[in-house]
Image (cartoon, rainbow, N blue to C red; front, side, top):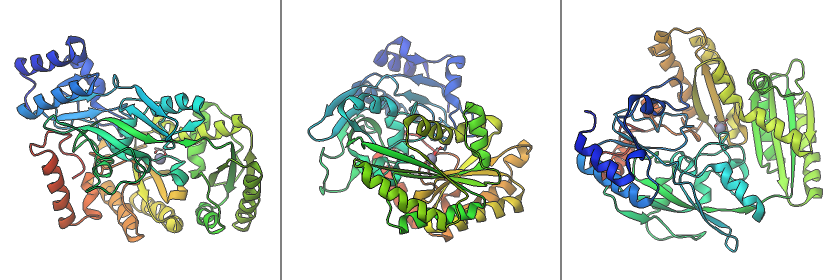
Length: 464
Ligand code: LAC
Ligand code: ZN
């Protein structure tokens, strides 16, 4: 792809003004990478629109001139979806970050796509409401990026992923037309559901500019439990037992000790490590009635004791809860600070979590790679961080490691799962898509892509 011509630069500059079009190599460099591994694909230009009208005009220029256009939120993605692997223009949504409306009568908020997830929840505190999806990167990730990846987070267990919490989207189609995909209703049975199709489409079909989101009242009470297990398979077994006991936790996370140690050390936070514990479960119960939650707490305690928990601690006060959550949320980032890693986002029906985790360890031993595992165990969603450690670049990018990862994904498939729970496919996982999809499936997806984006300008070379 040649760099943009003078004329193309001029057309783009006219839309946003000269300060909002970046062309110098030094300014473009930061947009060549995101949180994924150690990838680098710098764009030819970066553009920062402030309105849907500007987005539409930019899309029209790119579509007319066949310029690849990749939308980027906060760049916290873990599949390389926002990287312009074919060059072209990266469009930043950071200036489109307004909360346009909080409808307290219908429990809805209308927001622009460049809004930070946590900023929305900070704003909603005054109304006693919250928007449930809570990715680990919630302090920086954008609602638009969450929509692009169908992001989850710990509380997706009880409240659903992004998909379950978005009612309607304003999107710019590749020909520049602007549509709303649905209605601001809890039910909608009106033709194909384009809202749901666009959620998780990683910016390959249309550019999301605004979203109407579902809100809920903030639970009056939250209790957080930390359960240490000397055997990680037992920890995994305990996960499903919690549900079979009739409980519905708001989060149920698994953390291998090694990851907890790295995160707690990096954050300089105290964590009640128990000698010999291989894994910890972090379990949250929430609700409006304190009494009911304490009753559930008793059931939880009995269940975990039967499963051979080594240590069970309860955090009732907000500060301790927040410390444990901070340690959990920072595992990905702090492990990466120690070693570049490939993060596989495995997911299986949760009863098969013990088979998945022991299978990952066995495959790692056979192929000679080390893993740190953690994640949303209640959803059967296990993040597998494969550490680069002492591997050479050839080994890291070589066929052996790829085959090992393929085995992990085959295991997921054989257990009824798939290759990404919440991080998407983007650039790094697309070579593994054939493990879970056959030709007919691909053809259908390609047909959808063609219907939306006949010239293939939006985020080319992603997903499949
Ligand atoms: C997490 C991110 C990596 O759960 O999804 O920490
Ligand atoms: Zn996660």
